[in-house]
Length: 588
Image (cartoon, rainbow, N blue to C red; front, side, top):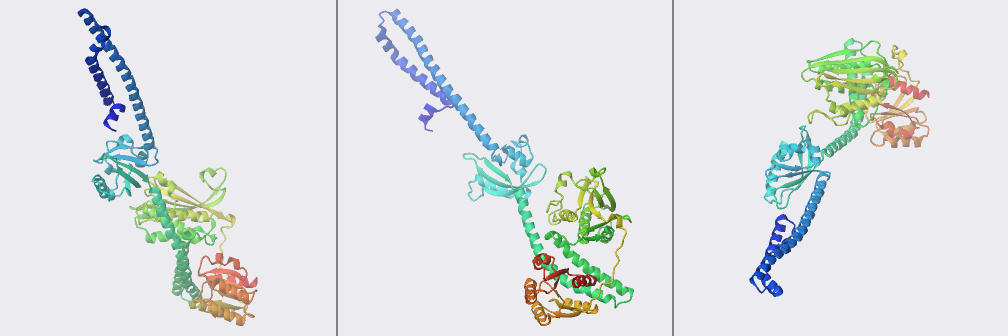
């Protein structure tokens, strides 16, 4: 504003006072200079007394005139002052409203890094009240140690008018609870001052989502990779298991039988290990069979005693009359092991790990003790530890994928989500009870089956023999071809083999009139999978094809090809399973 405009229209207190003073001085000077001449020309006094009286009237008139003028000047300028003050308050309220309701945290930082003003969003992010921050805390007190040097340099260079300093960047803020929050900051100097004004956006959840998305992508990649690995490993394990069973009849000594059993168990465990990867990475549920939980618990107990620190004391309580359940042994094994590993980690200095089972019946009278469960019979497996316990504030997050309380690189955050997935797959439920510094208990509820017949044992029967049927075995794994041929031939089947789909199709075209069933792998070079099945069907619409595969997902992929596909068998498999399924298909 120009000096003249400021004098004429300015509303500041000093400006108003100065303006009134100048006006008064001008009027006074004009009155002194011209009043005598003006009054004498009007009243024309003849005597000294008349002139003295005129001077007295002149003074009274001057006082009256100037007082009136001053009165109206003051009234006018007071109005301007009030309007200016009202406008200033309104502007302050508008700026305060914007300051508090931008949706981001705003902070004003002085040159010495003292925080002079913050809004409510800043209080929300940091956990500090305004009275704890404004004028009392330094900006650097909120900055993570690893970002401190960078932030101090930015603060200094910004005041040196360095245009290379970024105005938008990310840093880590430490809140009142000593938690790390990821912040996106936009910061600039306030014009004409050494103060900075910064807008802060908490992007912690966005960072977590990005990390979870990347983990999910890795899980998807693992799932895709694991399917291929499963196929290859199962093809490797299949001839091992078949060879072990073929050798049983030729080895009579106890030591040889024991070594064969160890080999067979190792091959089965290798296959189960692949299934465990597929369980969570691809959501594959697995087959459910009648299971006696006692066997799984005893196996878990052996693993714990062999691998856990000696400072952890194991207590295993299994009733003799424990009911049976329907489930997948591998998945239940995985669920129990995941919880036990967490219990081990919660007892770094040792403690007691208690695994127990009991039969329970939920009815109307005790239903309130077992939430989210329907009335009925259940097998309850409980895993308790005397560890650190679980804080109340994270209990609700326990089953969230990728949530972990372990240090970075030590935990995936998939252990308990996998357990919950397995329990849902078994129509069961999981309940957690914990007390800080006293320990935790995880309760797994499995629906019991055929409670009145749980004492019955399943006896192994001699597998059915062939009736001279002609079978064509197609598999690119030479070892599998040889073992299946040997087993089937020794059980009264006539067998031809082919090392790939092209050779298999050629042999079928030559001998299709006498081939009763084709056993083929689903994934082979030179014509395999769906192409081979369609080619065989074109050659003979009534052909029967039995798929033996190392892939977990082939059943879903080829479901629309029934017939001619009459059955599936997952590698690795036992001789009993193979012979039983072949007999069932051929009889039908």
